[in-house]
Image 1 (spheres, one colour):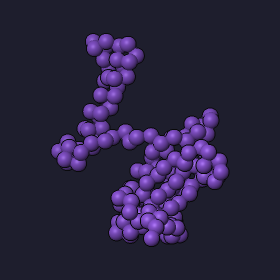
Image 2 (tube, one colour):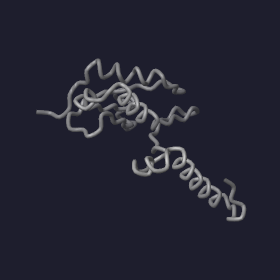
Image 3 (cartoon, helix red, strand yellow):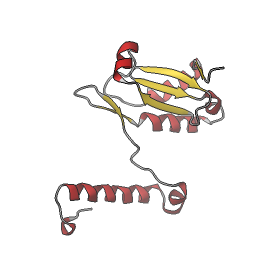
Length: 143
């Protein structure tokens, strides 16, 4: 028995309910696949260019509907939006790439400090690295 299957129209509708609230600069075509062994509810993958050309689809949306069915509506929306936020489109070329999240941390730190403080700390760290790369000295470091 295969672990892959056709995704239900309800799962696709749930995805598009969230997707249609987002604003993307170009049209994106999706291919959906169900995966009963996937550990995440939803996983977004860029389809390699040669297959994107053949199938006229750019992104593969893999959904574990068994997991999706146990989540409340808000959790589903958060998880779908979290995946969609990985999509980065170059407006000039139309090239799609997936980027990493801009905040990656542990839940214990979020509980202790809150999201805002952690995001600020990460931003300061990134800003410092960028300024070092741009040739600024420690005395010139601007927060």
